[in-house]
Amino acid sequence: MVPLSFFKVQSSEEELLAHIHCEENSHPPLLIGNSFFPSSDAGLVRMKLKRRKFHQNNRADAWVDSKKSKPVKSHTRKYSLLEYARDQEGMEIVELVSHMDAMYYGGIGIGTPPQNFNVLFDTGSTDLWVPSTKCESLACFEHFQYNSSLSETHKTITGPSVDVHFISAAISGFYSQDHVKVGELVIKDQIFMEVTTETNDPFLEEKFDGLLGLGFQEKSAGNASPLWYNMVNQSLINKPVFSFWFNCNAKDEEEGEIVFGGVDPKHYKGEHTYVPVTRTGFWQFDMGDFSIYSHETGICAHNCAVIVDSGASVLGVPTIVVALVNNFIQASGVVVNEDCKAAVSTHGKDILRRLRANEKPKEICVEVFGCTFHGIRGMSAVIENAVNENINKGSGGLGSSMCSTCEMMVLWMQNRLKRKDPEDQILSLIDQICSWWPSPEGETEVDCEISGQPTFSLTIGGRRFLLSADQYIIRRDSGEKARCFNAFTAMDISTHRGPVWILGEAFMRRYHTVFDAANMLIGFAEAQ
Image (cartoon, rainbow, N blue to C red; front, top):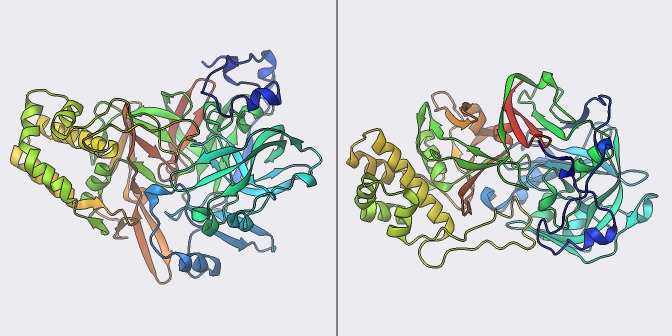
């Protein structure tokens, strides 16, 4: 159980500002009294989500598609296409479109009277941010902007600017305080970020309003209390639990929903499988092995770290996993990795000999390829605001991402040895996998005919969670001809504990997901 002190309360503006450029956890948390939980059941608070298919026949969609001069590099962008559209009543809205054809967004209001924004509800980050009318970046003019002078409840926070970095983008601004309306709830005096500068790439083309982080306070750029903490602190929900449901049935009127304060039994069937959160600051857990059909690959035989990220549309996995999947589904748009082939040809037999001598895969990569795993820390900035954190790479030898690829490849070879596969067959298979490397230039395309495609599975809490072709092959309608893409996307995120996987909407659409901060658990059940 998480103690009541888990949710920190900022007692003053000065206390908040003191942490904007300080190390994490540098002060003791302030205790919250027994009024933390209301005595009666306050019920569930729901936030409706919208989703619509990308289609070239739609004028707004076609305009966005025509502006793309090259394929989106999915491994370097957390967000992709944005578009303007008008609903049937003429109201102008901004809808979030992921590059894999999924689009989920929700509306909030900031200020009194509320100024409306469409935001992504993102478990992979912490802060709430929207563009400010004080922003002079060209990209800001394509967004709805917050005007503090129009709000009766705005409060100024004086202090230094705040910078947030993503892999291929950055924003900066300052903290403000105002009421925020989410559904029927009004969260009073919420600290959020007014963005005054944002990079044109990708925000200019994407026309993205803002983001509402559902991560932990430790990862706030300025140690601001997240909005969902304040829902609990202000007794607006009865417990620090929220859940996501994405409707896979495009014909249904209900497209998706976030429930704050608990779960809706109508959103899932069976029981949830719960796993403990393993890293403070992230919705991260340890996953068992990755299987193809019912055969374990050995890649995660000793567990893999996984972050559940509702702000990602894909399954972010190490490159070697994408190559394995590409091989089985016969994807196109792949490249031959000559370095990989050369490594197999030169060192393959030596690696097998070392495995038979019971050397550990990580040690083999250190000895054979000069990898340095010690000192590598931190997550990709796609997940974490790297305000004061540097990702240290080993000196000499392969880079951190290639060393992680080496380790997982050796783990796969080790598993084949345990299955008593002949050495020549193992080396032939790994050489073949080197020919199915994902192209760095864009998405991996695949045949839209899903019959006969394999089923993959992730072992979570001792249970196998299946991913069939209709989950990992995502269809995008483009004029008369549909195009389909592999949702497994290369995302090499290395830490000193090994590579990290990202489970985004492609997984969450099939599995109802519960984020339980009271017990520090993440739960999955089949969605309905």
